[in-house]
Image 1: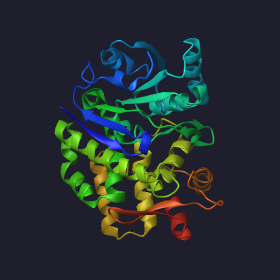
Image 2: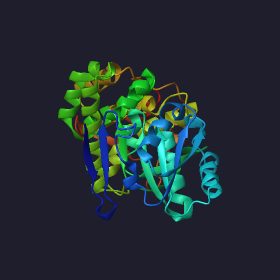
Image 3: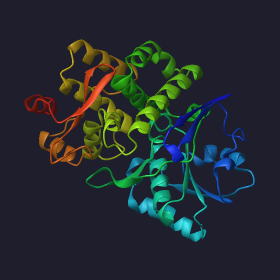
Image 4: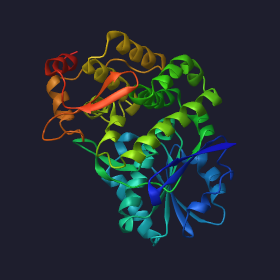
Length: 352
């Protein structure tokens, strides 16, 4: 059984297919491969688990593969270049499909390579982590990190389809599952108070990997993201709310070295910092902190000097006219992007 959502972008609309056991040939990916060949981009951790399963969904297609090293520290131009080199080695034409099989790092790098090769070839997302399933696989953001900041180099390049087999979460380490829950919590915090309350009631089931609870959380997260992306594909306005907690979170990742804190862990602490900056009632901040803690995520950032915070946040992509902008909450389920915040309060938060 599976369910399908649509990211409505006119002639570039695409489905998000969610279900259990969709690999092993239970979904025909060939329908989304316009040519006769594809390149499956995975990594050394995921490929042994799911590459052969995925191939069953591509019967009749010429399947080639490349495995990247695993980890955020490898989300670089050099790694992306290895995908381009493989495409050239295959003498791939414009009808090749690049398929990302893995988590957010694999998806972002593979998507960026697909956006660059021959000025753009087809791209398919098969996310295998919770964070990728609820966030990075949807919306067309692709890219790599730079030494001075996260995701500074990239392109918008929408996939042809997102295939989410929730059974892949069975092999996901507990820490990675919790990191994905940070992005799930984000959706409730920024635009759906009812979903936030559902998460409060169901966090134990989610951590226990209850299949029905996970499917419901994934589906609702994808619904909310699809709605925002359809309204603002290239982040000219409302889509920036999806970066709640990310201004602080990206700074944590940058200052502590990519991979020391997982992306979701950094975002979790960043969301609470942003909530405090928002001037929310203490009870609402406490609700958010309690939900983050219940997910097994950090509620406080690591020790970082205030100057280092500000230097890292200065490269945030929401900065305009050298002015920091943050995603702030007016209430649980209501958010906005603003450069109007209490500077003294920000300094207080940064100094812990």
